[in-house]
Image 1: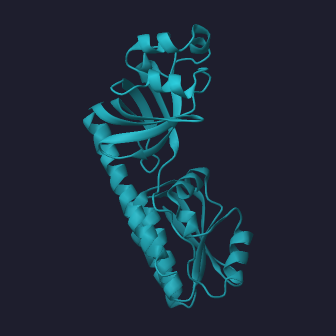
Image 2: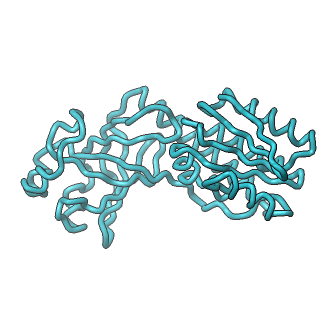
Image 3: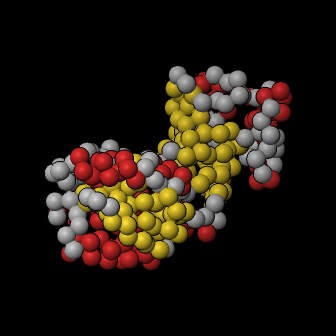
Length: 273
């Protein structure tokens, strides 16, 4: 990653370029410390050219924000890349370090807040909302509950599903033992009761999901439904891992550790604000 310093009239822009991961956290801290030592305490991080960011880097941004706040200054983020904006919003970092679509808006916010510091509260649980693809391992369950017309309207997503239907849900929580997700039925035509019947307790599902804070693409595993809750607009399910590759399990463990780290950092950043 490269860092370029651009002094503005009343604040400073730090342009970051490349992949912002654990290795480069010290580089950001060095730049922040140097600017503070020179009397600069209002800084905007331009993330337009950052194509990847991990949890440790997000933690470094939180740390920089706290240090600037302690020096009567402030940190904001400007022009985040699509990847960075998605991650920052999902983990709730924008509630601690404000995010803006332009350098001008970021600068205006820095100048408007004369008192510095960080305001806002972090929600009790930081849940990652992302797409999850699933299908029962027993294709007969799909044939029994979903019409042929609906199955044909929903083509297979890769060879791992081995059929012509898959559900598209939203993952709400993930740990090393299980995952939770919601499903609104898509184009299946099923009522919430029928969804619950199709995905009843003990049903095995092939699932594919992403871990946004890691470079790894889609993860795949087999899970067993352990909880089913009917809702007016669909169902909410919990499912435990029953078959998962060691590499995928390691990625899930890393993701769970990353999220726990960010929760601690975010809560620490908002204490006594």
